[in-house]
Length: 358
Image 1: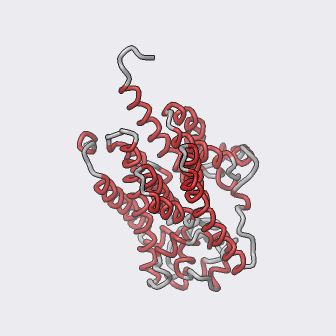
Image 2: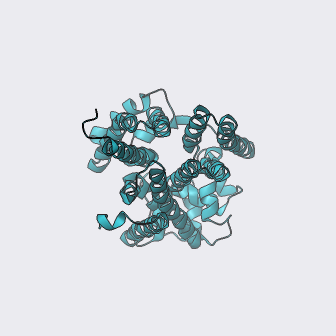
Image 3: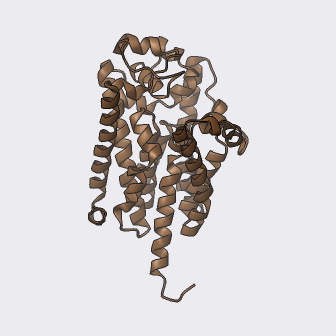
C-alpha cells in the first residue's frame, strides 16, 4: 500500500484525507448512535439547554462542561451573536474563532442537523487539505514521497479534531496550504490562506510570522510585511469587533502562561488521569522535546522557524491545554506534521551527499 502512495498526486492525497476523516466521523456517530456526539455537549454546559432544544433531549451528553464542539455549533447557528452565543463562556474569545463554525453552518442558514454535517465536512476538508499541502511543501524541498501524508492521516490530534468539531484541522489545513503557496511563489494566495487560518484559531498566526521572517531574511522585505501584517491585521480587527459586541475580554486567558508553567501545573494530575490521557500527555511531551533537534537536522530556515514558533507556543500553553493529553495532542498537532516534514527533508539531503562526505 505504501509503495503505491509514492506516485499519488496532491489532489488524490486531499481526497484520501477527506474520505478518511469521514470514516472517523461515521465511526463516532455509529458508536454513540447520534451525530450530535461530535459536539461533545457537557452536562454542566451553559449552552446545553439551547442545543437540546434544537437537537432533542436524547442527544449524547458528556461529563462536566463538555468540549469545544458545542461552542462551534452555537456559533454556526448564531454567527452574528444571539442569546445562546452570549451564554458561551468567554463569548468574545469564542467568536474570534469564527471562520470554521460560520462555514459549517453556511452563515447560520442550515438546519440544526445539517449544521452538524456542515461542521463535519469542513473538518474533513481541513484534514485532507493539511495532508495534501504537507506533501506539496515537501515537494518544494525535493521530497517526492507522498508518505508525508501519513503525518496527517495518522495524526491523533487532527483525528480528534475531526470527530469533536474543533477548528484545529481546518486551521492547520489552511496554514499549510498558505505555506505551500508561499513556497510555490503564489504570494496573493499565500496571504489569503494565512489570513483565513487565523480566523479559525489565533495560534495559527505562528505560520504567518514564520513565513514573514523567512521572506524578510530572503530579501523580500515588502512581501514579508504583507505576509505578517495582513493576517495580524485581520486578527486585530476581528478581535476588536467581538470584544465590542460582547462587552468582554477577547484575550487568551488561561490558555497562555509563563514558559513551562502550564506543563508543570498540569503534570501534577497526570498520574491520576485515565491511561489514554496520561499516555497522550507523555506523547505530547516527546513531540515537544523532539521538534527542535529534528527541525535543526533539516537545516531549512522556514522549517526551523515554523518549528520554533510551535515549540514556543507549546511551552507557553496554559494548564487547561496540558491538563488532558488528548487536548495537548490536538492543540499542538502541527508539531508532528512539521517534525515529519523536517525528518523527510533531512533524510533526502543526506542521501544526496556523495559517499564518504561528513
